[in-house]
Amino acid sequence: MKKIVAYKTLPDDVLAYLREHAEVVEVDAGQHDAFVAALHDADGAIGASVKISPEMIEGASRLKALSTISVGYDQFDVADLTRRGIVLTHTPDVLTESTADTVFSLILASARRVVELAEYVKAGEWTSSIGPAHFGVDVQGKTLGIVGLGRIGGAVARRAALGFNMRVLYTNRSPNPQAESQYGARRVELAELLATADFLLLQVPLTAQTRHMIGAAELRAMKKSAILINASRGATVDEAALIDALRDGEIHGAGLDVFETEPLPVSSPLLSMKNVVALPHIGSATHETRHAMAKNAAENLIGALDGTLTINIVNRDVLTRT
Image 1 (cartoon, rainbow, N blue to C red):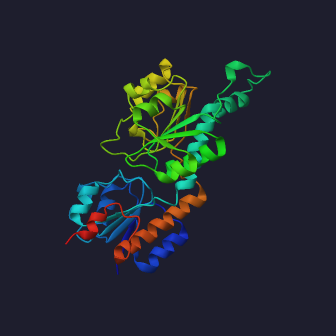
Image 2: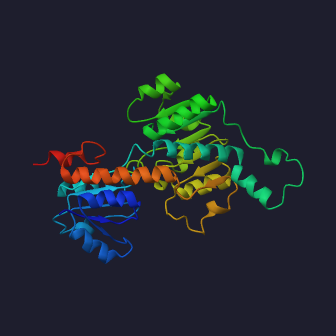
Image 3: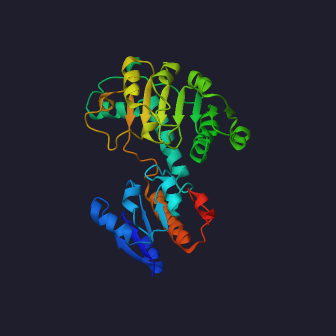
């Protein structure tokens, strides 16, 4: 019987589904040696938010598939997995809408100073009608610039264009005809996007090419009235440069669901900035979506081990290995 390592707590029904198909060993990934030993004796593994390095699976001769309960896969060395013939799967579709909701909540909260002013009320400081010192900025009718118009970026574009009458600009490796025809999106170069966007949204995976793609020069190229929104991966932004830009007024504010180091250290200057909305990486964190992700990941893993999976495969080249 196949053996699966579950290194993240799974819903009961998802665990039961896996046990119908394989022996399941639940392991605390924080116990490094036990986790590595379990991987070396397994056919597959399922979990999230834990880096699995080539060294950890060296000698794991039975290992045929890894299933991450996420859309991102920067915790894995994809090239190494492909070389070993190990299939890596992810869950790109089931979290699209909930993550897009989170992104738009960051846009609204940052523009209208929702978190700051909610704390102002709770602190008992609301003693008279607010004036310009507490005003926010409009969202409707503004320009949204999206770096990476894939599934989630497209869902945000739909909310922006159809719900808030926003002008949508985007930069992407390839055109997105659906977004252009349905939401009036226009593809431009990054330089134009930076100079034009009222809200700049990053929605790209973390790669060597996207790491620190927004740094000091890019932040200086943005409008001083612009707000940066990042719900992709923290390291796509040079965080030190962002802190300087926010402190010096080079941009108006930021809405962040991701950071270079997570959890965000309590010493981070971002935590004391009133023009920053900081969330604890909650992009897909709803009961419904996290359950759907776990179920999808479990189905991906069983399909990969059975050799029947044709979707949600990160390293499709592994299927053509001889």
